[in-house]
Length: 298
Image 1 (cartoon, rainbow, N blue to C red):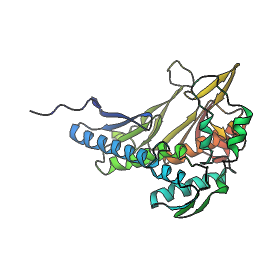
Image 2 (cartoon, rainbow, N blue to C red; image 1 turned 90 degrees about the horizontal axis):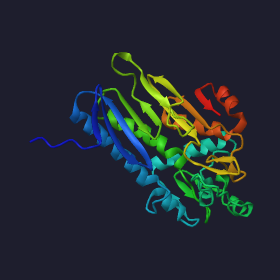
Image 3 (tube, rainbow, N blue to C red; image 1 turned 90 degrees about the vertical axis):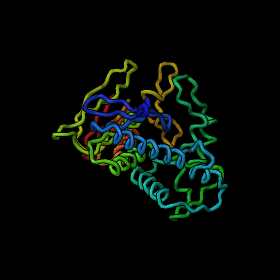
Image 4 (cartoon, rainbow, N blue to C red; image 1 turned 120 degrees about the vertical axis):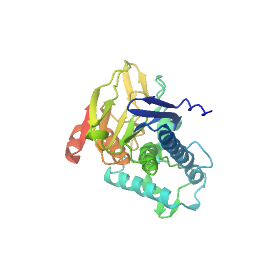
């Protein structure tokens, strides 16, 4: 008797949909095939890669690479090649953003909890943490990193998009069938669907009505979105988005509600979307200078 397929694999012609939850977000893979065994194998490979990256780079796990770096207390620590590549990418982001993209700014999450409440931190609380922020204070000479005691690094701004790219690579090792990997709205496709048809993907609305803000056709590459639809504070009529300026320790002022960017890879799309949000009122001008396909909602 054939074993029953797992609940996370569903067939909806012409796709198989494999879904799970990781990195605190819904994750899915769509594969255009009629082969259930292949779809299951590809889906399990996607899930395995997502969980590997979550375990390795989560700031919440003491035994992760990030947890060990943060707990090193100022001692030098050597990292593996994969971690070094991500730290190099983060360092490049810091440089091209003039310090606005800073993976040491994650310490601000201790006081900024974007849960929809009105709990805005005090000036004193913000000031106490700003001294723990600044990538320029970190000694990074690959593969060795020395993080000053009390400081932390957080790859949360890169890890999910990196996981999408890696997960699509895992699918490609299993099958050449058209595939889409989507982790919480950040996604990448292997190429067009059968007969050169594009994938149709929605831009998430910034409102709570659940309606899509737009529908795009994607024949290759990736999309990533940065915005405040789910993570924000609201006090006295002022909305505080979750994109923080490491220089001020406060949410970026006059930022768009969301920015969606198309790029060759998901990590590149995510980086550009975040950099645009960090520009605040200059987001649209930044995207125009970068000559990327992008959609800005205010």
